[in-house]
Amino acid sequence: MSYFCKNIIFFILIQAIAITLLIDSSSCESNNSHHDPWLITWHVHTVNGLSNGEILLVHCKSKDNDLGIHNLTVGTEFSWKFKLNFFGGTLFWCYMAHDNFHATLDVFREIEGFFDECNYGDCIWTAKDDGIYLRKGSVDQLREEWKQGGLW
Image (cartoon, rainbow, N blue to C red):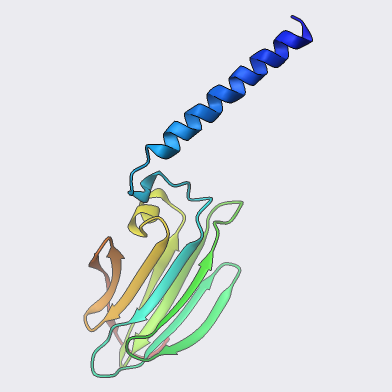
């Protein structure tokens, strides 16, 4: 096969791939479930939704990063953003406490189900009087109840 023919075949192949990608991207609905999790900048929000002016202690970590201890007043949040770990296994967890209650939970885990639960971009965790909720769409879902006992 001549050099010219190989170039023509290569050009046609590239055009077919480009058209396929264009069709796929234009057919995506507003539903973000088609997004590539590797391209997304993920945001995790921890929100104090407690009543009676209670302070929420939040201490979040990953294997590589300690994000520090934060004391949140009612209605405020601590948040951070990140990209997925190139080698996989991105995981963040938080310890939260108020008054005489505490809870520990994974706030981001690199698994397909979690991507959907975090609306493909934002994991919004809200501490309320009866436990910690994750926002799914426009609905807060109870994910972890408070355990009684002192800090740490």
